[in-house]
Length: 247
Image (cartoon, rainbow, N blue to C red; front, side):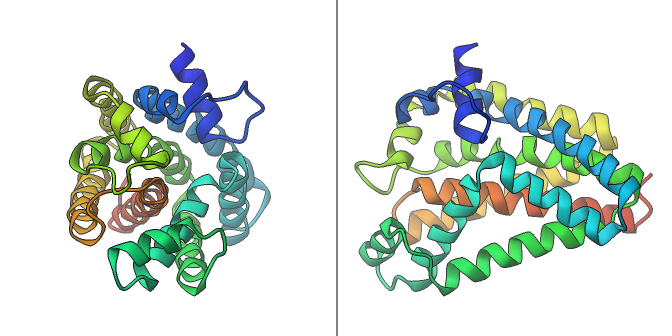
């Protein structure tokens, strides 16, 4: 259970014991989707309460705000840094240097704003009976994508969080952790639930190919960016399914 504690401390803002070294986080990667499912349970309850108390757009904004608070903005920070580096760096070396810069540039601000807006818009458009299921699935499925990315990409640097995570994440743990999201998707949505699973996997494959060409591998910021993008993708996919009369 130590791995679950390490993953929970790393992925959330909960006052848990210290997560340890970056290598410990990599070894606990199989627990990422489990922590995501736990986060989803909290968000599902919040979505049900907010939907009862507030109009759809306000309720969606409150849930997405709580989402960011519970994770401490960890992946949003990675998204901003990755967008700045990939968008503003002309060369591999320049892109990696920009990612290390603690300041946030225009690409990062726009990326974070777009992802948050997409989450709010998708969630606001979901029927009450579907919204809580979407926010239960999205964090669990999104937190399985770093496990896949780590199998597809070598680290872009010889140090840093991405390097330690990619080297320490065990293939067996990745396979085991990746079984939860498809099972959860099927349980929540039936066969249509496999659509966001497939799209998240395809997005990860495409991102891996891009990172290998652009940077020669992944960084910790790229892992965070992928989680945020995958969460938004899951919500958007469920919203489109619901628009086509998903029960």
